Length: 158
Length: 283
Image 1 (cartoon, helix red, strand yellow):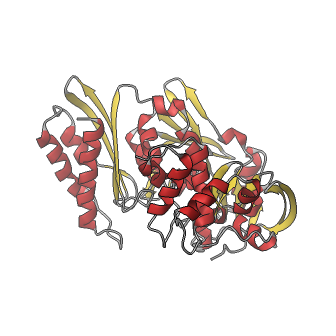
Image 2 (tube, each protein chain N blue to C red):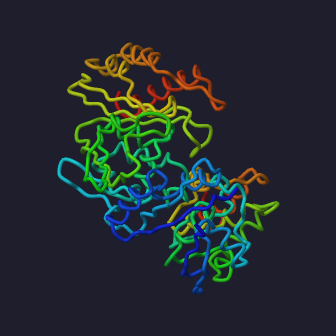
Image 3 (cartoon, rainbow over the protein chains, first blue to last red):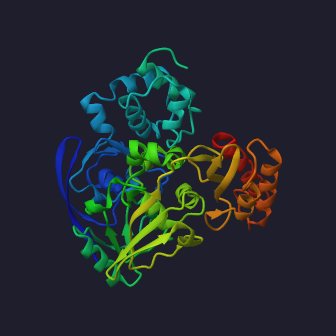
């Protein structure tokens, strides 16, 4: 069983056509086939959140989706978020607040935080922590990450 | 780690999906949201020869009001259930449990049918279905059958689903008039439960007419705590001794011990979860 399949989807606004092994996950397809290495491969079993990307507008784990499952989908990675300016305010706040040290978790953090902010989430530290609970950071202790998200939302944090 | 080789099908019609499962003779697995199956394949705990992706079967999605029951398509995602006004209004115990399931990015992909099919002992929804007397609707080339949740979960990742059957829907009676409570204990939000309790309780006046208590994360599968239910039947609300007897009756359960929690610790936590769920929604 060779297991190849044709895939057509949009990645960061551009149409992509490819022939992919069906066992290749979406994360590996983005990183190795398309060279989009901003999405990070951490645990490869859906725990760490470093590979969090947007598929059809919502966050998913890139490692828990096969590339072929993205047929017809709109995929946005941290590169796409940066190019479009959607993540600019978060990136500036992460920098200002020292919300990253090694930066490995940051692309996934940005995707999850953006989903929270765009979903109308308020400056509620417990709610922000709950929304980011699937994104592990081993440097910051999360305090600065929550600070940065609160900064972007504005208003008094509670 | 990467998954081993497999074949991949994405049938557009139910008939094709059922044929593929039948032809696979046990080596073909349905792919729902993939949020448990993909890690299991990456660990090579699961090594299907063929994956039958259910994504194109629109009839497996959606939440429908069927009079006395709510029917939930097996491919309905957690995030869709969380956004459903029908679930919030008619199946509040499920609505209460949903935010406890994993993390947002997992809930955007994971499906209720996939969770029921996997039957992870620490999963929330099997216990919710037990407490609410839900039904699992299965289909194969031979036709459709309906299995009560109480007869469906048989053991560690073991269910009454045959390899050629597909879970097409879950049916849940509307919870009109029932009180409900839910409590899950884990080390962090979204982690696998160390113990949890889901309750659906019928109360008349101040008296408990029937208490359905399901536990998860404590044994080889989600299960009813029948001794605790008996201890609470007929009890007057506010009578703490009945709740004490219910917690004591949990001793009948064969609690599992592993690296996350010993069996005595799980027994203790199950009692804590039962008390907190009761306090939240019943007492």
